[in-house]
Amino acid sequence: MSRFLIDSNVVLYAVGTEHRYREPCRHLVALADVGRLRPEASVELVQEVLWVRTRRLGDRAQALQDARDARALCVIHPVDPADLDRALELFEAHAALTPRDALHAATAINRGISQIVSADRHLDGITGLKRIDPVDVATIDELG
Image (cartoon, rainbow, N blue to C red; front, top):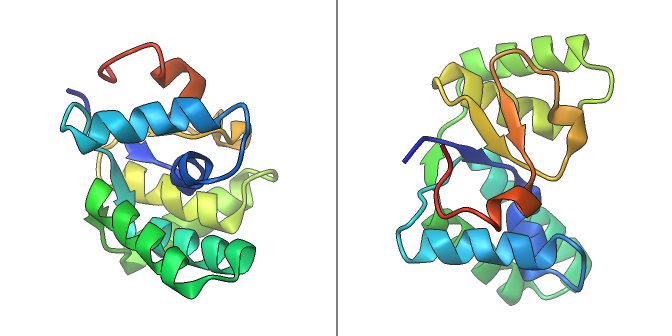
């Protein structure tokens, strides 16, 4: 099984309301839950899930549970100064890239992870990182 990092939007779509990405993201999460896939992420993924779910739900307990579930789903990488430096470089080089996605991308690149599962097309075109759309994951059992 190849290594891959997941973007926060995979978790958020999986636990969110009806959307075209909801079922593909739930499929990916289900594969991870049974050990068929082992996503990796930065600590920023957990923080982002907690932030977005708290803001959207107004239910701190549910937001906390969603964040803990996301934490348990992934191999979590700390963010270090090298990640921050790479994120700033990526943010500067890619006008459409958001700060959080720059950090996700930097985390992957700095750890030799060449794939990121994300609905965000602005991650396309980053040297050393291939974006895989969650819809495409729904048709496979492993990332390769």
